[in-house]
Image (cartoon, rainbow over all chains, first blue to last red; front, side):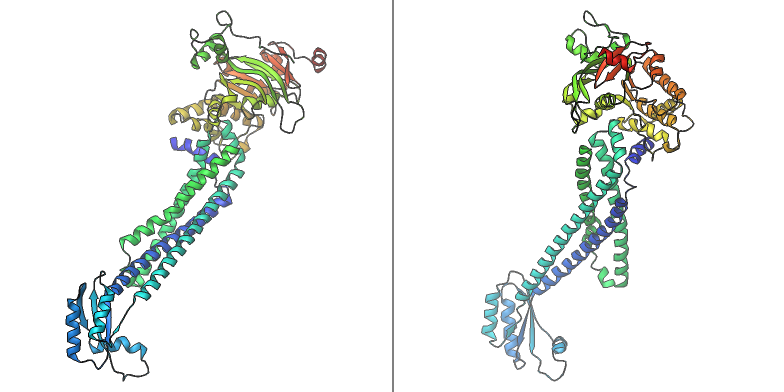
Length: 282
Length: 282
């Protein structure tokens, strides 16, 4: 019975008759889906980038001339292993070197292969001293310095994160505008009901709450539908490309679930302020 | 301008005479005769108290209500009559707090409405029943839901609400039309729904603006009998009507309004003056 009574008040000030209300549901589904999938993709991308960055920072490749003799290589290996923050040094076999260089020399198979040493290092390595030691022991050696590339990629990642932030702000703005439009048009159509409820003794807070409840419930419904669609898509992708499935960490799922909740929160805040100001002016 | 005091003034100690229902109304307001001064007693014992009240519409040149002074004691029944454009509707708008006087002081149920916040105005309206000439029913709600509306604002227990609504609808003779939509009802039925809605929360003050304006004479009398029954239970009733026959037959005093002020108080059972007589007296 209490449900029935509450229904009478809810029905009196229902926004269901407003076309903008249906648009709100559709747009909430779209925006929530976009945010869910976008945020999950960014998290996966960020995780992949972090792993790659750690790998890049943890390895230094040294290229020696093909004519380098074994004693020189042996000496270099021994000295470098003893260097602080170097964990290990490994000489790549010729097949692996060939496969690494193959893409750059597609026209010929007959090229002299350099000797490649891969040093596994800790992040606190002193690169200047390390480079100086290598040049002392093997003056012709080339050191693979990927710091510039890492910086470029880091900047790109930062930029893309800012881009996503700006995009999110735009989405939130769209959501706010939609809610304002829905509340305004809805209350314009329900002007008579609003005035009757006021004459019956409805307080501003009570009337605002009637409107806000509808907006929040609708945006939560939109969130739920969008979430179901997003989960279905992610599961399908993981099924089709299993290697992507490995990237779906708990963090990715959390982001997928909770980031789109931002839109119902925005809807709640916007609906509260808009409805309250309209009710007060009426 | 004619300052007016209604003849059925209650008696209290040396200064006032009070009937039983007025005392109970005073008790409801927390009045304690031994502690309060006469001014406070006066405010509490009168449901409506206008002191030199004037109202000019924003675009109006002359005031719609001009220096109006009158008081209605708790538990009384009065008609408000007068020609079209005399200011009856403006007085009613001030009574249901749609507009506030531009000058003077209005006391309703012991409260100075000039000092009330929006929230307090809403709470005060909950103690009043308002019957509009144009019914002001919500077409998207059933008869039952329309009558339930004031109770949803009160938060009363649901079983009590259901019982109360059924009783009221039976009382106004619409027990068999509870699930009908208002648009399918006749004018008299709509007016009875409006009355049921106005009295469902047992108001202390009932104001009705031309409740018989849109119904035939027989239905008008039937509606008046409903108001009389409410009056017997202690509700203060103020009823605006053009219908001379109703005013003369029902034997309650009538406030005759013209040019925005009360020109004459006509005791119960007496004939209403003709327009020319009023003009001559003025």
